[in-house]
Structure formats: structure tokens, C-alpha cells
Image (cartoon, rainbow, N blue to C red):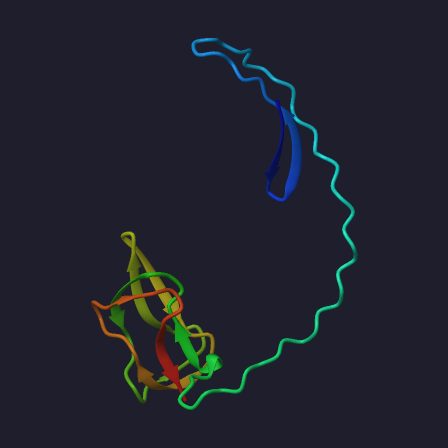
Length: 131
């Protein structure tokens, strides 16, 4: 029986022998050769992404610190009004018994702290808003 298998974006044509129950097959088998890839048309240039108008009350993505993983907040190291520098650790989280220190990429003043110690958060959830 011939099959086409896709591994990491490459296609391979392989031949598989189906054996009866209890039968054994040789362990060594020839390595499959990549399948010929179909011709693909050249990709059209991509247009610049269209940004949707911001909704009232929407948060500016450049002024927030988001959770990089699903986990539990174990420590919040800032309060509203605090001034932080780039690379300061703002929140410490735990996921699967591993500690993750979440740092800010910008120097700013803390506007709102959206989480507290002990709170479970989702990946991408806003932890802190900056002014």
C-alpha cells in the first residue's frame, strides 16, 4: 500500500506492507524519498494590515503588560502610580511548578494593576496597564 505522509511541511511517498496478526516484518526499511512538490504560484504581495477603529474603553496594546502563559500570579511588585523602567520585573507567575518573571519592555508609570496574588490568569490576559 502506498501512502503520502507530511512531516514538518515536507511530503514523503512511502510504501507500507500490512501484515497478518502475529507476522513479523523486517526491521530495516529503506528511507522514504521526498515526494515531488507541486508547483506553487508566486505569492502576491501582502497589503498593510487594516487596523480596526478602537472601541470606547479599549486598551492600547503598547501600554499593557500581558501574561505570557497560563498560570497563577504569585506576586505583584507594583502599585498604581509606581514608575517602572524597561526590563523591571512587574509580576511573578507560576505554571507547572515553574516560576516566570514577567518584565515590562518600556519605562512608564503604572496606571492600573489588573491582577492580584493568587489569581489564575490566561495567556494574553492584561496584568498591568501603563499611562
